[in-house]
Length: 146
Image (spheres, rainbow, N blue to C red):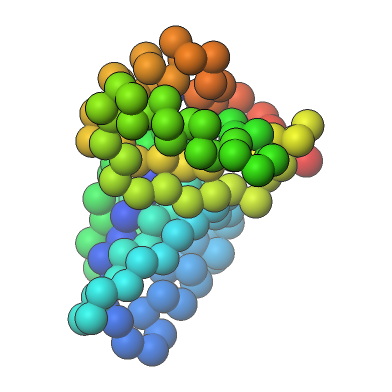
């Protein structure tokens, strides 16, 4: 039920985001979704790709600092309050959400968000117990085959 995410630590200066994008492009590795967060002197690029092991090796071989993290893909009703309902379930269970970002994927009035929890296994149990669809890698990648 968890999806592997690659986090790259990049210097906050022109051209540093382009370099890993070019490497992945040349290797024909497609980015399924991404997020960029910045700090004063560095940024964190978070990406999800199908073959994360190949991408990690390629990026590290070319001098990138890469960390692998487990994240959770969750279906969210695309309506006012869809996300609020999920966050309330997590809050009531005392589950800490570290960050989240969205896929551009939308199907049957549902969007897909990526969540990073401090305890993903507990979060998945709580979400499933509340009939919230947690999507595994296989299902996620099938949905992205359009």
